[in-house]
Amino acid sequence: MINETWLILGASSAVARAFAREAAAHGASVLLAGRDLDDLDRQASDLRIRFDGAVTVMRFDALDTGTHQGFAADCAARAAGSVLQVFLAFGVMPDQAEADADPAVARHM
Image (cartoon, rainbow, N blue to C red):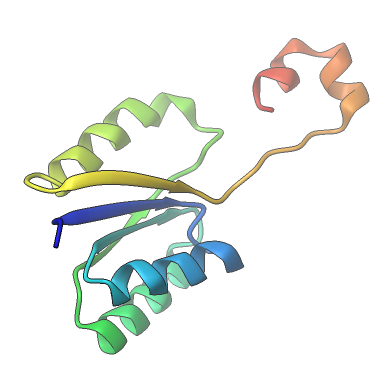
């Protein structure tokens, strides 16, 4: 078996929860990342109980781009010695008229 670590961005979503269960069930380490740390802590506890695996909770806000470089370095350090893979389960969709009128809004799409 490959030593895998899955970084799940937007880990509070339903599809991310299902994916996290599958990854943990197959023995992968899981990094749950998102904004709602209380929810992610509950999910991590459940995964640890069910699958006895390594599960870590991390704060991630896709719109806080100033934190992304440090976040990526932290993820790489936590996955040291394993294959780091990413599952993206979040989206940002502003109003189209706002995005057309304001380049700052469009950058967040």
